Image 1 (tube, helix red, strand yellow):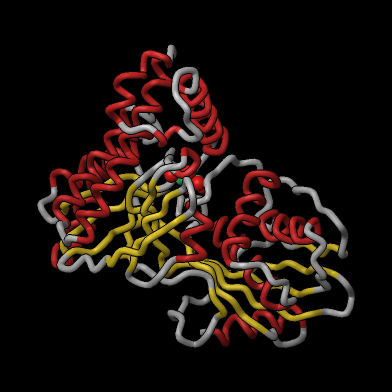
Image 2: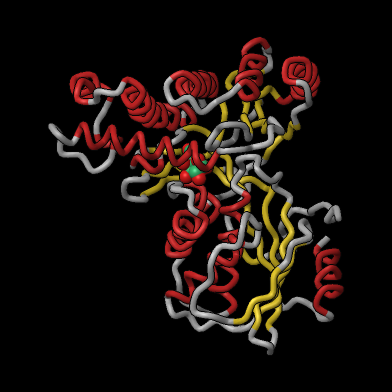
Length: 395
Ligand code: GLA
C-alpha cells in the first residue's frame, strides 16, 4: 500500500520520496481534562494515523500537499510563519515555524501527507500531523531534538500557533505510545509507566458521533480558564502549583474558597477524575476489567454533570451501552463536545452491539455513528513495511 502513496507522490512531485514516516492518533482510556491540571491520564496510541512521505528540493521551498485535502501550500524558507485561516497545513507550518525559531538548519522539502483518522473526531489528527512532521524533519535534517522535545515543540504549535490551550497528553501519546499498552502519564512531571492492556475477552470500540464540531476550541479554552480560576482561589490558602496537587479529601475542606458554583464543579471533576485514573490503572494492571469499566462510566458521568463537556450524541452512546449486556464500560474520550466515545465490548457481542447502537443512535440523533473495533498501536516512527496496511487515499 506504501506503493499507492509513493505513486501519488511521484504524480505530484515528478520524483520518488526519499523517506516515509508514520504517527498514530490517540484515544484516552480515562483521565479527561486532566493534563492541563497536572494530574494523571491514561491515553494510548491507535493504529489509525498520519503518513508522511518526503524528498528534498533544491528550490528552498516547502511544498505541502495532502492526499486527503485539496488545499496545498508552497512557501519559501523564512525565519517565521503565520497561521493561515483554518487550513490543515497550519499544523506542519507551525512545526516548521518553531524549528526555524529554534534556528534549525532546514532546507527545501516536498511533503505529501495522508491520514486515515476521521477529521474532527477527537482522536488527535492534529497532534498526529504535528508529530509526524516534527519527527520527520528532526530525522531528515539530523536536528538532534529528543522525542520529548518534539512533543513539547508540537504542543507549542497547538498553544501558540493554532491557539488552543491544550495540555501535553495528545502529543505525548502520539510520540510515546506502545503496542498493546496504555500509558499512565503524570502530567505534573511527565513521568510515565506503561500498562499492559490485553483486554481479552473484550475489545475497545471507538464510536464516532459524527457530530460536526463547532466552537470546541473556544469551549475548551473556557474550561482551561475555569480551572485556572479554581486554582487561584485555592492558592489563597494552599501551596499548589496545579489543581491536581490536592486530593478529594482536602478539596472537601477547602472548596469554600471557590465562590463560583460552576468553577467549583469543574474543580471537583478534575480532582476526582485524576484519582479515578489511579484506581483505573490498578484495575487494568490486575485485569479487573469490570472494575475498569465501572470507572469509565463514572468518568463519563462526571464529564457530563460536573465538567459539562458531553452532549446529546455522546450521552446517547453511553446510555445505550448501559443497556447492552455485551458492554462493561463506556465514556466520551478527548475534549468532548462531539467527537468519539469508547466502550469496552465483549468481542463476541461486538456485531450485535454495533447494530443495536446504530439503530438506537440514528433514531435519537437523526444520523448514524461510525463504529470501529480499535487496536492499540505504536508511537511515531519511520514508516517501515511492518506498519499496518492502509486504505487507498479516497480522492
Ligand atoms: C484535547 C486536548 C488534550 C486534553 C483533552 C481532554 O484532546 O488536546 O490536551 O486536554 O482534550 O482530556
